[in-house]
Amino acid sequence: MRAGFHAETIQLLECLRQYGNASAMALYTLAACYEHLGDKEKAPSTRALASKKRIVDVFPYRLEEVAVLEAALRANGADATASYLLACELYDKRHYERSASLWQDAIRDAPDFYIPYRCLAVACYSHLGRQEEALPLLLKANELHPHDEQLLTETSYVMAHTGVPASERAEFLATHRPAVIHDHLALELENAFNAAGEYDKAMELLTKHSFTPCEGGEFAVAEPYMFNRMTLGRLALAQGDAEKAMGYFENILNVPENLHAGFWNDSVLVPFEYHYAEALIKAGRKAAAEEKLQHIATLNNKGMWNMGGEFDFYSAMAARLAGNEAQGRAIMRSAVLAWETQLADDDPGASGTTPFYLSFCEDSRTVKHAALCFMLGYGKLFFGDSDGARELFTESLRLDPSNMKCALELKLLKQ
Image (cartoon, rainbow, N blue to C red; front, top):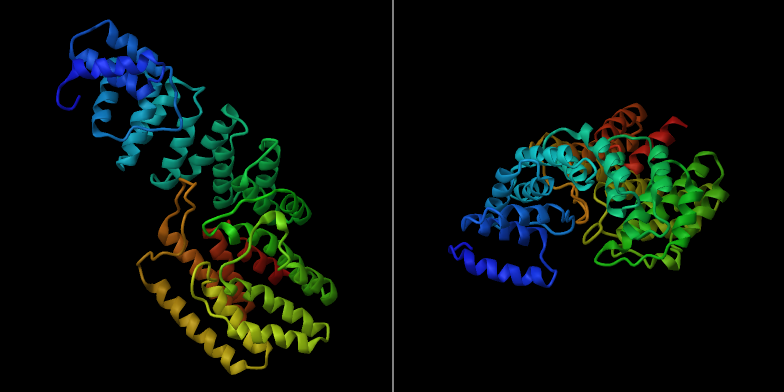
């Protein structure tokens, strides 16, 4: 077709159509070739067939396909499928405004077609600065196409990152989930239950769903379980019940077999081991606590799934708990100086990554600022400035409402 062999292209694509395997793009391309050859009957009839194939799982990407789809829209400006597909290709080429306009056209011309709502939500959230429009669009997509796990996972993500109350998010997922769910949606639901304080519901799902993690996902699966146990242990500790707290902390490393999970780097254990040691000391078991603290002292924060600034905070807290106040202060002074320097630097840096199965992206500077406010809140906490810690944790949570660890610190500061 690029070389101008329209008759030969027609012959090939008609063979494909004869076997019933012609996709929407194949039919749009076939119609464009008929149009080039002046066939005023086959071009519109073929495009009419193409417009009925509302595909959602494959997308055009060739430059020639832009011309094909633009020709389809010149022929029929109300062709929702052509608008949708052209928007997908232009979005890939970073023409975000025009893509959004085309998805809006598709919604106007085919209001029952769910995927343009979802795609427009991605563009609004990730590139157009219209984050507030994303959730209503996703809710409409869910209404039109219920029990879709990708939609539900993405809706949960947007809810978590735009400050929708965790209880509302958990209820939405629990009432809209299909009977059988896969790993990503199970993780979203577990995290929503944990964030909402519905720890028993989170544990019920954690112990019943069989996960198949891989490629670094082992800790992503283990973390909701470990966070659940640690949260309950810390709450018990805050209420003065060291024995009850130890019961939770003892179970942290007993990751249920159905999770098929674990961790690649022992540094992720530092928060859990520190709070376990804290409970042991309060229960009068100093020797056992010292063993935990000595283990923390041997760990480093290198490699995959490291703890970032949390490692510095908990290493300093562990040094203090072991009686090495000067060492703890030195660790935290160095860490706070580094965090303050990063905060003053306008470079957005790389504070985190977006899972490959999600198309929604955060503003990198906001992500960086939220992460550093969280870390600096730890710094204030270490040096005894509870009001300063509360202020920084509040700011971090405003910028990133999905941070359950930050929300937990604020909750404990209020007790």
